[in-house]
Amino acid sequence: MSSCPTRHQLVSQSSFREILSPERTIAVHSQRLTESIRRASESHLRNGARLAMAQGTLETICSGLTQAFPDETLPLLADMIDLASRYQEVSGHQTLRVRLEKVTTDSCRKFHVDCVGLRLLRTYVGPGVEWTADGGLTIHQTPDGAVVFLKGKHFPGWSEATSVRHRSPRLSALPIEKRQRLLLTIDEAGACGTSMDAPVMIAA
Image 1 (cartoon, rainbow, N blue to C red):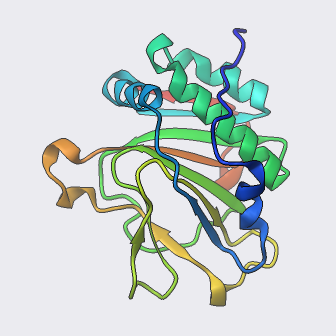
Image 2: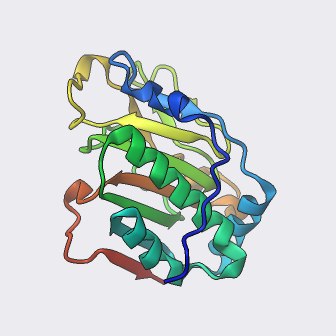
């Protein structure tokens, strides 16, 4: 197995750990994409797999995903693995699920709370996730490249009364050439009922 690329150029780990505060249900870290990650992301969007997902330890995830990332997209994979490492440190989970997906439809258009413990999202290409803390009266959109942590219903102490709900942006309202996103989602392994029998999934 080739060594897994890493970057370690994100905000401090102490900042990421802010999501663990009882009063927080969302943490948005504005992180502009480097030019190398942006180019790699656009290349993957043009030519890469529609879905690349792996779960298990960081080593298993890196080994499983490497096949879906040719040389020109390695900066993207490096960022994903680095974020998975950060998520692991914040969440305490040793086995994770890392999912990179091309989104081209108005999926997940209703505000909702995920049935997970802690979720990390990063949109590499396209508009970021939308969220609200007041039932939709005020809608926020995460900035380009932001790293987002969201507490789900399974997070210890989660409360409906203080929950933040989120949804995918409406792509159909955008010009045709902009109706696509490249979205990274990181959860604990087995999240959302994902079978552990298939640790790697690459879909063209």
